[in-house]
Amino acid sequence: MQIISKEIEEYCKKFSIDDTGLLSEVATSTWETEDMPQMLSGALVGGLLQILIRISGAKRILEVGTFTGYSALKMAEALPEDGTIDCCELVEKHIQTAKSWFNKTSLGDKISIHQGKAIDSMDKFKEGTFDIIFVDADKSNYPLYHKRGLMLLKVGGIGVFDNMLWSGTVLEPSDVESHALRETAELIKNNHRLEPLLMPIRDGVMVYRKNN
Ligand SMILES: C[S@@+](CC[C@H](N)C(=O)[O-])C[C@H]1O[C@@H](n2cnc3c(N)ncnc32)[C@H](O)[C@@H]1O
Image 1 (cartoon, protein in one colour):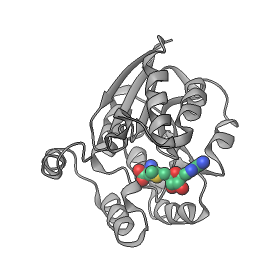
Image 2 (cartoon, protein in one colour):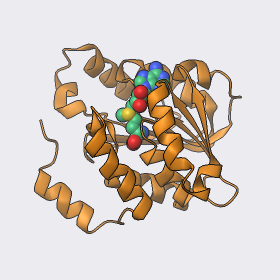
Image 3 (cartoon, helix red, strand yellow):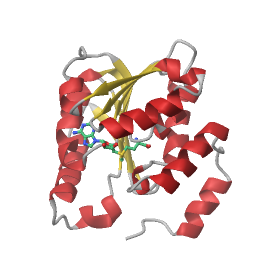
Image 4 (cartoon, helix red, strand yellow):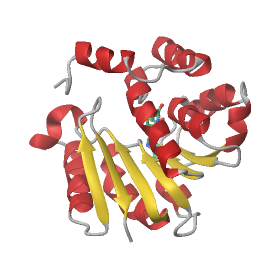
């Protein structure tokens, strides 16, 4: 299921903030050279991340799932000079590609990559470290990323989870991923400490605020 039509998505992009030159290059190169380019979050999700960062004044961000580096660079653009992003990525090839883009700009100085399973990398951080966590890796582990990520967020921090509609399959889950995504949505909705908003942007973005 295409959540919103291609035409509406293009219209939304047209009237939203444009990618800067380097971000356009990352996106174009990803679509031309990667086997699964659709993993790239894109300008609408990226634009939402930028606005959340700017409105909240976030300085420390955790990204779970980096791929070719698009979302990390997009967030780095919106961070203040002393802002930082810790990225968790499993696949060596993606890390090398992302680093090659990070090395082309001073924005790369704000970004650190932690190689390995994200859940192991997340265990290395102290509770209450981050202003924003952006989760965009293997869907079957989303419930785990949510539970651990919530501990790592400061009070007042923001959680952002991409692909929460999984092409609409969450309506009647029948595979591991759609079950895990639905479980994650229920965990978030049923947690009285959180203010959630699930939006049909691209493949579905859940945003919540950790109130206490
Ligand atoms: C959807 S892509 C991330 C897209 C990226 N956020 C962007 O917008 O360009 C998911 C990434 O998660 C990585 N990944 C998958 N399983 C992982 C795991 N267990 N730990 C860390 N990264 C993982 C994949 O290698 C892939 O690069």
